[in-house]
Amino acid sequence: MTLLSLSAIGKTFANGTRALDHLDLDIAGGEFVSLLGPSGCGKSTALRIIAGLERADQGKLTWGASKPDIGFVFQDPTLMPWANVFDNVFLPLRLKGVARAEAQPKIEAALARVGLADFAQHMPRELSGGMKMRASIARALVMQPKLLLMDEPFAALDEITRHRLNRDLLSLQAELGMTVIFVTHSVYESAFLSSRICVFAPRPGRIVETIHVAAPTARTEEFRLSGPYLEACAKASRALEAAMEGA
Amino acid sequence: MSLTRLLPLVVFLGLLGAWEALVHVQSIPAYVLPAPSLILTTLREDWALLSASLWVTLRITALALALATGIGVALAILFAQWTWLERSFFPLAVILQVTPIIAIAPLLLIYLDAETAVLACAFLVAFFPILSNTALGLSSTDHHLRDLFDLYGASGWQQMRLLRLPSALPYFLGGLRIAGGLALIGAIAAEIAAGASGQGAGLAYRIVEAGYRLNIPRMFAALALISVAGIAIWLVLDFVNRALLGKWHDSARQRS
Image (cartoon, rainbow over all chains, first blue to last red; front, side):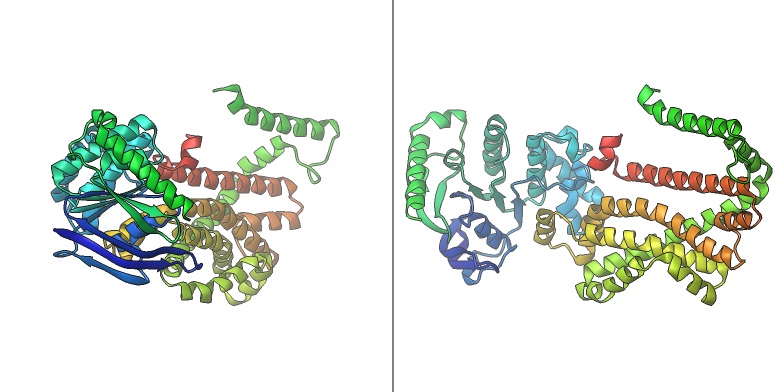
């Protein structure tokens, strides 16, 4: 069942930069879709249009049954440095007018899901980069969103932390049944995580190839050695190179 | 206590010792340059008079700082909410800031009683750093956090209370520390103007009055109290800064 549909989306910024041109994309509920492309190709802009943080100049964004609750994870953890982890995760509920006592079980559950149950009272500066990102994911999950938008969330992390968070993200998606749209410029990350990879051409951004990853979504580290993973990597790399050459 | 921490005290005491020795060796009369020991004696003997004046100056400085904080922060919030308001009124604040307070003080003394005029002068110099720093802080919020608040449908007031004001706190406290010193300077400048017109009761008035009477040791004693008051204000505001930012802001963390 279609969750959202972008048709012929175009976006030009005030400085004249044409970020998106005729972007067409349908997302079904429960999918894990990666938007893969070089930096500056408009994939983050597409994500922001879906989140409602930008408006498209052309085209149409339509929602399936109704617009679902959305969680957003930025490239930086974007935590409020003056608030502890608990209060950071509490933020979306607080803005909706939920009382602290009522929110507490949900916050504790979200923190437990990302492995930060013992760090609720810590300040962001006391956390490592990976833990900050986990707190950011917990904040996005606390509203139990049906759609999770992630804008290169693991780009600044070391390889080992990144792999661990990749696995945890797949577990969370399986557990919560969310749809995830994941922006990345890493071929390997997109192949490991996605059920579908949409390869973007450089500016103006548009999808030039869609790659389906033929593997169940429950994936372990062994998946990185499997045929479907390597095949997806090869296809995505070729598509990306072709898109860059055609630019 | 480490040697590095003791060094400023050693240097200060050394300078006082050199000053004391110079006065005695050169037999400099007290009406030209009183020795530190004589200033200390004057402080003790004139304590009733000088402490009453110190209280007047400190009370005016604190009141001016409180008014500057309240009005400066309130205006900064209004400016942040409505940019047309900022465009309309910020130039006026700049004009007040760039006009030397010593030139405004005699005028204020014509329209207001001495104490109110001194208070107005201290307020005027303390107000601008708080207004400009807080306004800068309110407009320097992390844009990703603003996006996040937009995404979750935060109202303007929620954004202000939960995001923009906490973000602006380090900027505001920076402005407050500048304003603390300036409020004292403004009060002193206005008291000197008031003292010249034969009014006032603050420490600067005591300096002017003692100058007329060639009571140089008392001038120095009053000056020493002003310095101590300035240092005390700075220490209090530094403590407030560390208490509010120590847990999360780098500026306070590096010092702690």
